[in-house]
Length: 442
Ligand SMILES: Cc1cc2nc3c(=O)[nH]c(=O)nc-3n(C[C@H](O)[C@H](O)[C@H](O)COP(=O)(O)OP(=O)(O)OC[C@H]3O[C@@H](n4cnc5c(N)ncnc54)[C@H](O)[C@@H]3O)c2cc1C
Image (cartoon, rainbow, N blue to C red; front, side):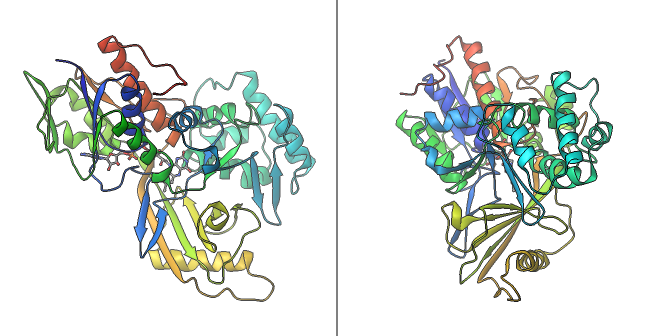
């Protein structure tokens, strides 16, 4: 039987896997339970507005995601790209200089408004300490402990390291893995000016990668089925069967590209998976809330992405400056464990935006539209010792892909894409097919 791979899950991991398989002309079929592709990074429609399920940012270090976008012919203009910056109005203005590493950051810190010499020295101390051990910690500890051990100032922790930790790992410094944080610093701010660039989608997330991926797959004669939930995977003498597959086909290989909490249900028929199932079900997760507020007349922020302190919102994005409708703002609360209702979050977000951005003594009119989206399992909790499985499972020819699969990175678009590529390449090895040229696509 010639290889035919079923990919269950049309998020960024599943689609990256399918594209890579298709590039090598391996037959692949993708099944996605939702009506829209993209999983935890997808567009949603509400009241005539098209927004994302959550505001996302990418960084220059997302090499595999950026390569995949290039392969799929996505214009770089679809990403707003700037040298690394953190802008907290009236508090901190830090921007990497357009210079080769390490001067981009050193000069950026030197010029930063809002930091004193003790802060600058402390920041360089942390990076030097990590560099000395090639960014490998003898033993994983929490980010908080790392900050204490390297004598970071209170201001630097509050304005730079803690926000970066939550933004990258979606886990507060008190619980976050210092090793994963060090990996992110190694490959971004400590690597090169381009690796530390901030990239913000100027289009919705489904348009960014999933749509070009599906266009490519269909050009290659491969199929993608949305609104098709796979309920169970079994195996008979012909290969794998998927309960819920409208074609009742037999597959030689299956890639489970769902969230980790969704693996247990569909693999219940494999007793070999029992231990893995319980390890995946025990994984802890962190939420992210995004509050969209649309202002009329449009409110324009001083920069497309602004950091906030002392409130609920950690970052506010001006979607009007990012290819979206003028006046649409997205406020982000990462690692959010709040008991507030959606209405209360919208109100708090409006009040915080009014306090920071309304011009002198003016009240902001109430937003003409507001939508609060909380993804309860946005990412796994990136803590020291957190369980992360490998691609291969105890069932032959059944693989895992997803942002939670073992890698250097926290749960991100990049770890999702990388896991999909790894699953595809593991299949190439199993069936004796060469990995296609990294930079060409037919
Ligand atoms: C609000 C929010 C903000 C984020 N911000 C950032 C950010 O700024 N930068 C960043 O890099 N990352 C960010 N992330 C993380 C990033 O979105 C995820 O790491 C990534 O999207 C995970 O992709 P995935 O393919 O591994 O999993 P998923 O996206 O979860 O894909 C799994 C897919 O499988 C489908 N599925 C599940 N079960 C079945 C079944 N039985 N049959 C068929 N289909 C099934 C699901 O519907 C889903 O589409 C954020 C996440 C959220 C939620």
